[in-house]
Image 1 (cartoon, rainbow, N blue to C red):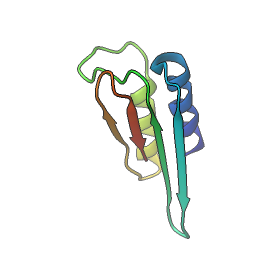
Image 2 (cartoon, rainbow, N blue to C red; image 1 turned 30 degrees about the vertical axis):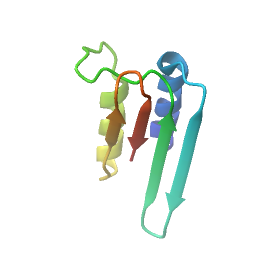
Image 3 (cartoon, rainbow, N blue to C red; image 1 turned 45 degrees about the vertical axis):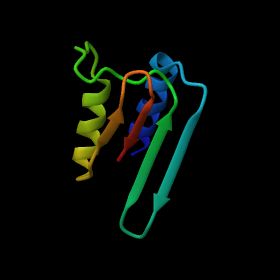
Length: 82
């Protein structure tokens, strides 16, 4: 989970041009939920990527038997949940 949070924040710093980032962590006895939201430029979902950022995040979360969800619209920021 920690590596996913670091990857989210690294991508925001490198690419998003965001001026605001919200991070929410909710932990219970059996689960940890992470939400990272920014007001940056968003991601063109159909755009070809050369790196492993989003794919790596998905794989790390899947290895923990979790879920990964990315909501984005080009020009309107991202919301990443896992």
